[in-house]
Image 1 (cartoon, rainbow, N blue to C red):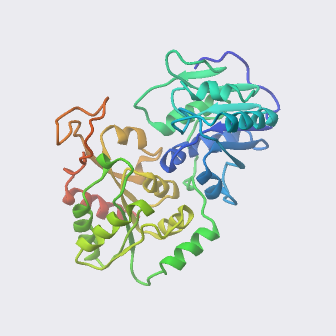
Image 2: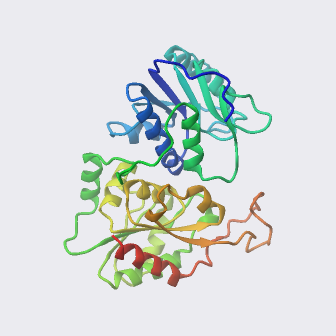
Image 3: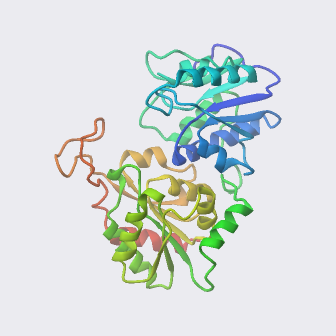
Length: 356
């Protein structure tokens, strides 16, 4: 930790820069809770994306308000819309934030952007050669992301510790429950198991035929199998359902993010690749089996490891060209987790179901 200024007194307004995807938002939840506990009277503002605003509207939790970050090169966008950015910076300066926390990478682009907010004190991570914040820690990769973000919260005066109880990190709303019930009514006497075969990175996808075979095995015990995915993953979800012999329901593209939370809260088990819905399930306390590729498990492990049953592939070389993909990415999209066995994942699924 490199503090250069004392923490300001009378903290009334905090901004956290995190314009991220779903899983990355979930990784930040422990840090956001810690900040809210440290400054319960302060307004906690998330500088995020449009989906954050929709998802967090009227949802109990540490975030009081969301401001949408415009396209900024290196800060969630490939290029900058200059006029829109200048208007945004002006609005941020007018907010007169007491604390501004950078939780978006090593700071090459995000640190200079955050410094323009004009907060009384800034904190975050710094890679070598980037503009320094008032309080900072070195940026490390790979790292356990939840702990790394908690460390940033600690720079701003938050107490870094696990909550003594087992409350979920993410709250459900009645709207979540109603949407899930409208799409998929409760089935009396049957356990609901959700399969999540998609992932934004194809290298992290367990094969569709493996998910289908697992679904058939779990359905033999009388479970209802639902296959989820985003609207872009509809074909994949339908492929899994088509490959199954047991009946299954394809839900891809039918639920909002909140509705998915409502569905997961009813599930006896979630089996998923390393993707946003897996981390939503973990934040909701859903028994989960995650299929991970090597360093992604280090980065994505929850703070309570007992909530996750992890299947791990240690492959580092591309199955097509044999190039090592740890530090550089080859052009191929072949799965790096295909070798994870169906028997292994089934055993983890049964273990998760038994220990509920």
